[in-house]
Image (cartoon, rainbow over all chains, first blue to last red; front, side, top):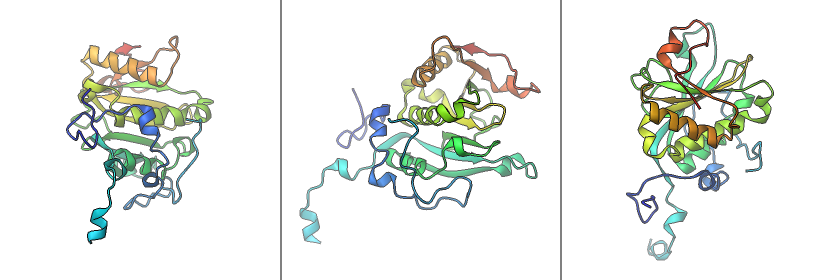
Length: 55
Length: 197
């Protein structure tokens, strides 16, 4: 399987849902991204840290 | 300085996980005083798993948006509209939600669709994928998965089957695919389905 990894940087970047979900509350993911536009309907200052369903 | 260079850090700890494609998240708010395109706003683009979550965690859940609003996630360079060169020959798999499902299913359906896109769940059919939209509407919310070419029957059906499976839509409930060109020429939203799964 030719999957991307730090040691196989040319591999395919395919990720299943469990793999993706483990990063949801990573330190990088709960820091507000820089440069978001001024859209008060949408942009939150603090992260949402609960999901509707216990993933 | 020399001390820092002596520290050994595993690559996993500092390399963000790159995505196969770069994606852009859009927000649409229905303001009848403005042109349609003026109501469409790019939120941001990202190309790593970590940056996706950073964005996702800092924008309102779809179920909390006012009626008339949309989120869209499209490959960077494709505008979330029929008229875009990448979309004009395409269509969408459409999942209609009933009113109760806004609270019970909508956010999960949307997140699952986003994970399918950024994780490349459609694998070798990735070139057929343009993006996805979620429409918040009083008369019923809609999830659409947009593909590039409505004539590509086998690929389109496989994409629809994968979407249905990932959303855990019961087998007995069919979802339909409509070509944008059919939808655009209908007054209502009653374009015939080109495919069903």
